Each structure stands twice: as structure tokens, then as C-alpha cells.
Amino acid sequence: MVNALELKHVDKVYDGPVPTQVLFDINLAFAENSFNAIIGSSGSGKSTLLNIMGTLDRATKGEVWVNSQSTAKLSRDGLAELRNQTIGFVFQFHFLLPEFTALENVLLPHRIGTSIISKEIVDRAHDIMELMGLSKVKNNPSARMSGGQQQRTAIARALINQPSIILADEPTGNLDSETTETTYELLRKIHQELNTTFIIITHDRRVAEKADRIVEIRDGKIALDMYR
Amino acid sequence: MHPLAKEFLVPFTQDNKAVCVRLVLDRLEKAELEIHTLYEQVLAPVLNSIAPSDQEQTSSIWQEHVRTGIIETIIACCYPYILKKSPKVEIAPTVLVFCPAEEYHQVGARMACDFFTLCGYHAVFIGANTPATEFLPAIKSLTPQYIVISISNYYNLVAAKRAIDQIRTVAGDTITIIVGGHAVSRNGDIRKNLGADLILQTYADVHALAKGDGLL
Image (cartoon, rainbow over all chains, first blue to last red; front, side, top):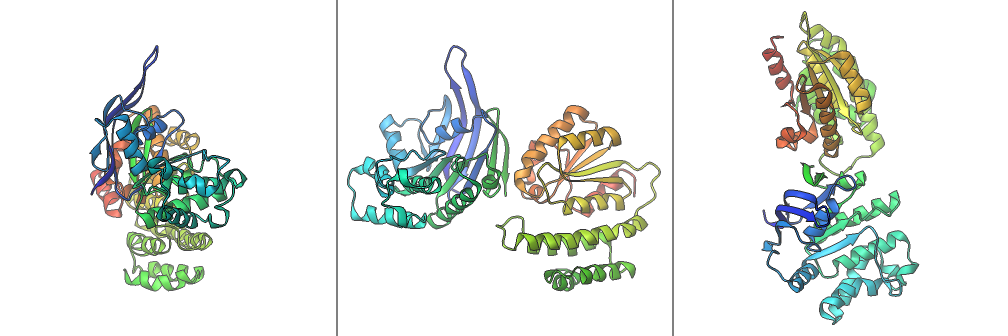
């Protein structure tokens, strides 16, 4: 089985007057096209772990491999390129640009990557937005959308560059229970239709228990690694 | 599938409780059926066929609850037959059986409890969704030799580990902690991570333990 993402002996220590170690010798591999949840209490180190997996932060020790490529020796620009091409991010807060429409927000990561917006890319954006149930509101300014629509737009934005991996940090943390269910169903649909690997940090039981694998982080270590 | 399971499935999928119960009681009354065969080869497979734990929910939840209710009625009706078969043991080791917090699937735990009774143990079923505030006083009061934690939904392995940690804090290694259930069967190497001593999944497993304990 090929791994989409792998962490080998990862430690993370935050510098300061008193250095604080938040991750301890983490070894984790996520298979391609798998649907995973990471759970843990506040301060357990799960968001730090996600930032390291997404190459937004560097491990103090150990290695991160993305699509069988070590990120250890990549420059900052090299990491940014790998990230933009391979990983889509979804956060608890959507971080949409309010003055842009939903469609323009979805196209942004591609614009950052190449600056050329081809017809093919616009068609892809339309397809993704249709998949996300956003066709009717795609030309609305993002500020004039419901919370659920904004989060779905953020997910569509994460998908525009056809990433093989989606890293999501509490993607339903700001949504009511009905919208959480809809959003979860969409994530599953993307997983099945686009063969995307999902790694979702969540404290929402309804989301976690539907994942195919749950990793529990406790005090910066893997406490449990469980399969459905 | 056991022939009785096939026969049972017809009234079961019609939610016909009376026919289901009569069908089983008739076989037990005629001594044509062992309890462990009933549980493992009839009730568990038919229940799993309508509510598979490893797939997305397909049948209606209300229907699953009605059918689970039928199975639980049958399990309750089996108790006199279990007592008839249970060996007389002078000092039977006590076994506490429960599901961890938030685990509401209790049929497997009830079946496990009956297996222990059938094998000569003094088995006490506490219930589903049992938090530490309930199982810790029970342990103090009943001083069991064994604790059995049944986990169906794999998310509840987290709560099971917490429960085991809490039991170890008060009892150390003086109690043997056993885990079982669907979530454990899918994560066979998880015993050590959970901090449990044993995994038991079948009547044969409980029978072997009882033989080792000199009860059979």
C-alpha cells in the first residue's frame, strides 16, 4: 500500500525561556485514498501535528514524507510548491475574502500557483462547486452566504488544485449539527469520487466515528490508533 | 448460516417479536438448541445482517431498535435455561461486565455475561454506557476477579482505554481485565494499547478460561 503522508520519529519542541516539547517520536503513515480522523483533547498536540503534516511548520526532529517524497531538504519555496500542488487545507474558520464572490475565492489557490485562469480551471471550479451544492450561490459575495455555504466554499477552494491530500482542522467546529452532517457527507463524497486522502482533526464524535481510522493524540503521543 | 437463523430471519425482518420468541423458546424447551449456538450462530448473525457495525447505517434506526429489542427479549427469556446448564461452583469467581461510557450497544455484553454464567462464574451485567462514577463503586462493592468491557463502536475504544486506566489506578494488576466486541475484533493488536490483559470473543474463549480456572 502506498502512503500519501508519513511521519517518521517526529518531535516538536517550541523554543522559549522554557522550551516546550509538544510532540514525542510520532510515527504515522496514512495510506492513499484513506479517510482518517485525529482526535485529542485541547493542548494534546493535534493541531501542531497537522501543521507539521501540512509542511506549514517544521518538525524539530524526524521526517515528513508527502507522496513518497521527503520534505526534509526542500527549500521554503519548494515546500510552498509541494503544498500548493498536493495538499488542500480546510480550517474551522473559512478565511474567505469577503469582497470576492464564492467562485473567485475558489479560484484563488490556482491564481496564486499560475496566475493564469484558463477555461479548464473555471470549468473545474464550476464542477467542484456543483459537487458541493453551491451552483446557485457561486456568484454571491462570500460575506453574503450562510455559514454552511461558506465552509463548503472553503472546501471547494481546497480542492481546486486537485490535491491528493486534504488536511482539515475542525472543519465542522463552527457549524450546527445539521450542517455538520451535510458537510461530512460532502467530504465523504469527495473522498469517494476524487480518491482524495483525508486527515481530519476533530473533536466532533459524529465526524470521527464515521472515519475509517481514528488516531488519538494524548500529551503529544499516539495513545490509540484504531480502525473501523 | 445456521438453519435456524434462516428460519428466524423471516419473522425477524417482519418485526414479528411473538413469532421470533416462540420459535426460539420452542427449540430450547425441546433441548434442541444450545445457548451458545443460539447466541453465536443465530442471534448475532441476524442482528449483524440488519445493522452491520462496519458499514454506514442502511436500515432505519427505529427498525434497528425494534429488532434489537426482539433479541434482548430472547436473551432475557434464556436465563432460566442458562441456570439449568450452569455448573454448581462452590466459590464462583465474580465477573463484572459492562460497556464503556457512550457505548450503547449492549447485546454483545449481555451475551458475554451469559457465557460466563454458563461456565460457572458469578457474572454481573452492569449495563451499556457505564461511566467511571458507576463502575468504580461496583468494583469496590463486588470485588470481581475479572472485568469484561465490551466495545462495539470503535470510537469507544478511547473511552475503554480511559476506563481501564481508571481501574488500574484503583486496583492495579489485581483484577484481570478482558476486552471484547466488534471494535476489538477489527483491531486485534490493540490489547496492549488498551492496557487489557485478555481478548475474549467467543463462547469457546470463555469456556477455555473457565477450564483454566478449574470451573469445568
